[in-house]
Structures are given as C-alpha cells and as structure tokens.
Image 1: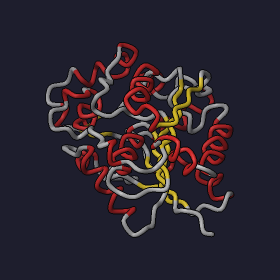
Image 2: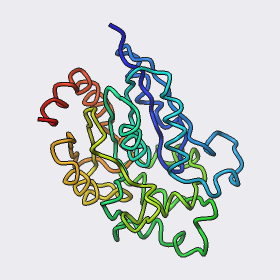
Image 3: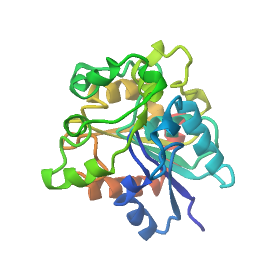
Length: 260
C-alpha cells in the first residue's frame, strides 16, 4: 500500500532547505516528500514581496498545494506548525506533526525570554507593513542557542527576511482581532503529534505547554529537555526524526484514543 504524500512547511525567516536533514530520512522510509516554499520566501525573492503578507496567505498556499493529494501528512516547524494546525482543520490529513510549533490564538505567545531577539523589531513603527531580518546575535538567541557554533554560520547565511505582519499575528494571541492565528480544533480529525524543546527561546516551553493544555487529549505532546528551536539540525535531530517516523506507523491508533 502506498504511503501518504508528505509536505514539509518551514517557519519564519526560512526556506524549504531547512528540511535537508529530515526529508531524506522520510524518503528512505518510502515516503514521497515535498518541502514547500511559502509565498515571498523563494530564493532570491525581493524583500518587498513579503510586505503585507499574513498567515492567511501562507496557509492558503499550503492548502492549494495539498488539494490534489488524498489525505497527505503535513510536518511543520515553528510558524509552519501553526500553519499545519490550520490546514488540518481545512483539509483531510492522515496526520500532522508540529515541531517547535507556534501556538494558536488562545495562547499569548510573547514571553520575556523572546525580547532580546525581537524587541528591536517590535519597536519599529508600522512593522506590520514592512519586512525585517534578524541580526546574527538575534538569530543566535532565538533560533540557534542549542546549535554547535561551527554550524551556526551556515544556518545564519540561509536566513532571509520575514513579513512584519506575520510577526504581529503570531505574537499577540487572542489580541490578534483579525483571528488569522485561530485554529478550528473541533474540525481536526487527524492525529496530531507535537515535539517541543525545553531550551527554545522563540517558542518558549511555557507556550508549548499552554498549547498542549488547550488541545488536551487531541494532541500527543512530547518535550525534549536537550533541544531548543532548531530541532531540525541540533545534536540529536536523528532521534527526533525517527521518533516521528515511528509515530507515523500507527497515528490512527492514537487518533481513535484521542477522539474517544
């Protein structure tokens, strides 16, 4: 029996290449995989193309990519995790995997540990109309604090600009009155797995735990004390991929238990 198509969704300041470690291991297990590029994030795209883009445009682009496929699997990192949750409420999926996932509207995401990396940007007037980039020290604090120094330069060079509107939409929880960060959890019928890193500075562990509480038994939530935000390539990443692959062998079993 053919395995479901797998779609990987990257996070903020990123491109599809962030899945360069995970995608081959999925393919070695017989999955056909696509690492998606969100609007405005193509290599060489003008930063101006990001201005004004929001989560709704990102989520819609993923929904459109999935439409031709019967019950695919979506794996999302960071912002991509929130997109995966929204997609799961809109499209029939086999499963959704959330890696260091941004939280839906009921969870207020801004925490003090994030401020060294974000305060400078939120202080800019009308950031929601602009794009912005992280300075190397900001990226090190927010994204790469558990990544060996020898690997940080490579990851830093791959970062790109991001939409300021998205930063506001993700950060303010229920204060996002437009509701672009909401998830219709009652419409999600597929199993959900979430992996969280206890050392994460941009999705602090308190945010991940609050998201897990909001979902309750609907979410298989797992914490890893040695990981931070870049679970995609930090030491121990292979064990995380294998954990996901093992879970995908019987996600329907978990879904049945969660629904009951």
